[in-house]
Image (cartoon, rainbow, N blue to C red):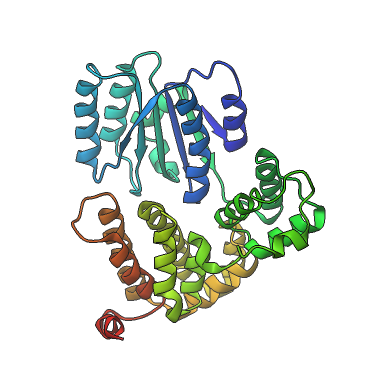
Length: 343
């Protein structure tokens, strides 16, 4: 049954959730994982442990389900937490999933997070069984949606913001939910007995591009090359999951690729359809004018290498690959990377 993110939160608030499969997908990888975190929190509170899976291919997806179904006969109650960054779900993968769902105990469930499923994928006959469970589609936030979302998250954290402070946060975080949520968590450390003002916010340094994934990507798109090593180090020190960065980079690449394939006169309209607003829109439009087909191919290859290393499918250090990925996205050619390493 297809529902939106707000309906998922309402269902989680019910005493008896009782759903054996929840599939959350969307174009914004941060929001997808954010709403999935609400489900993970409920499972943790119920004493249900998770079994995290990062399948790397169609065959790996099917094989991991087979292995874990056997293991589940001998282990305590758990749930599958499956994070798939691939762009395609096949009929065989749906069949393996349906078999896994049907063999679960009553207290077990499967959580799957993926990029947005295409209409073609959802029209597969094998995908029809999803109608029996929860399919949550997460859309990127528009400017007005972002304000409501930020206010809701502040309320959840018991933070009271003056209207001026809320508008200030909207301006400073440039419509990025990751930056907005991180800002609120910093504000949580302030005195909760009073309403937060602009002056309170200005007392803490939380609005640097290095503090969040999408802010870092914006700096890279702006070709702030000198910042790249600092951005990577900052993300690493904050224990940011490389696989989350790979998902955000893939989203950015997909937007750039879509804009690049569109006539320049139509790109403004396309930005609205892609829900790209504010300063980010100008950054994306400038960058898409600078790149060509080969650049897009090189960026995609770098993201794939990062994704594989993040999931342990490669022996390479994901943070080194992320540095290379950022340089490639900024327009630095591969032949120049060795020179940059030296300096």
